[in-house]
Image 1 (tube, rainbow, N blue to C red):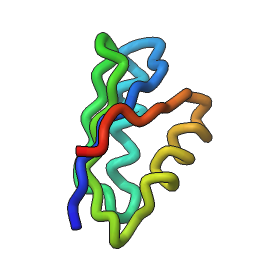
Image 2: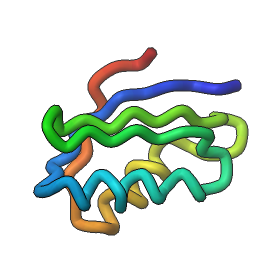
Image 3: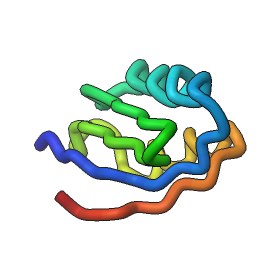
Image 4: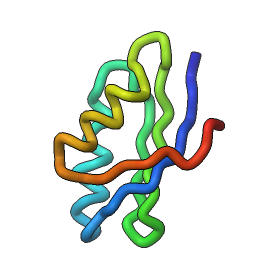
Length: 72
């Protein structure tokens, strides 16, 4: 089932947006939108293919802090 979640992420510059949007290549991830000015990351993913924690771990491995905002 497709799920969309929004997170706060400590982005430092507009290049961070591009790096984070590159996680769209993760299996099960359908869409990622990063917004540097808002410090928000919105991810649409298939929760039968990838766990939310796996997405968050991938972001953390790039030395970003990530916190879930909602459970939409």
